[in-house]
Amino acid sequence: MNLRSERLMNYAVLVLFAAMALGPVLIILGNALGPQSADSGPGLLGLHPGNFVDAWQQGNFASYMTTSVIVAAIVVTVSTVFSTLAGYAFGTMTFRGSQVLFYVFLLGIMVPTEAIVVPLFFDLRDLGLTNTLWAIALPQIAQSVAFGTFWMRATFRSSSRALIEAATLDGAGSARTLFSVLLPVARPAVVTLVVLSFMWTWNEFLIPLVMSPNADLRTAPLALAFFQGQHVQETALLAAGAVLVALPVVILYLFLQRHFIRGMLEGSVRE
Image 1 (cartoon, one colour):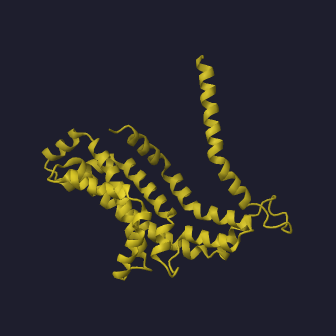
Image 2: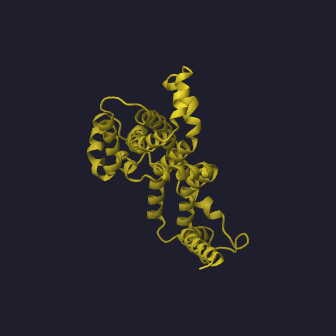
Image 3: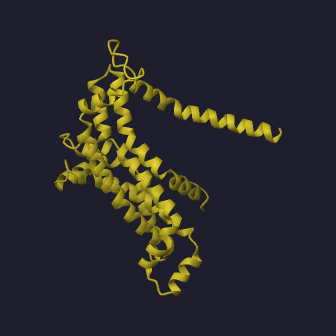
């Protein structure tokens, strides 16, 4: 097989996988812009962007997405800070029990949410935290810190030892070395962690459902599920609601995609 044939085959494979990935997205978007019923007018150029307005108003997405934004901001901010500090400690320092303690952090990745959500609910209820933002945010912070510590530890372990030694010789302490020397180099890894934490938090369904039994603090995925139950036959409105819920994750990724892809590529080649 010559170089030209190999290149054409590579492009064919890429186009096939792109079609498989984008096909469902385009179908949902097409349904969202389609008519709600046979009696609907021709719309604007054959499209019906008013479906998004109707879905937004009927599903009360403004309130629920505000809750999701607040929860995501708390989880992403706290977990990123804690993960960076813990990853720096595990990745660059040696202290008694560090290996065992790191394995304890890894339990947060290995234990599924379904296994702990019921006892966690009773614990938070005894503390008076159910039906609060903290009941929704704290479990997700713990889960994100577990992965984030693993991710940032790998990042800092692969950092140049010469940089750390040079900073130490210049009299920089641990905090100065982290914030002035290592973090600027590790920015793609931090951005990747932010995007992943935001995506997981935004899409979380079980924890908000269990931790807010009176439904005062529904998040966007919960709102979409209840909206689906109320509009079973209205495909256009359901698709419009799904697009609205997915839009914040897409926007964040588009803004940070360069750093995200760079962080993922760097992470894939680390030992």
